[in-house]
Image (tube, one colour):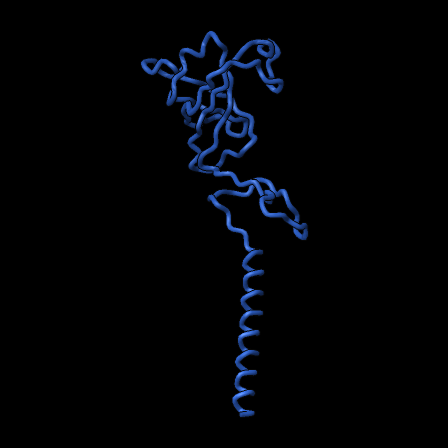
Length: 160
């Protein structure tokens, strides 16, 4: 009878230890964060040691293969722009070359030119936002790099 009692106690201790191990493993697995998409960390929002509540962003991930440039087109020219129009993107870091792109979005509503546009003569005009997708397979372009865009709306003409 004592042997059966000892056996039941031993089984209960084992079950308790297994439950404790499972609880520790579960808590540990909650400390591992898996990104929902592939990308490169371009900004760290939370520092090591800070508490994080579920749903709080901890990093900014950027897919460097699918960057885009926002540009603005005046009302008088917007009718010429179509989705998939080819573009050339120029950046200061690579003055002797261009990067291929294409129009991926044309805004449906005009807006006043944003404040951060560099040319004063265009700041008070109504413009349409246009997004240009960039072919960045080499990964040399980075988010935030200033860029100039040359759009080609007449596909019968050659690049100037």
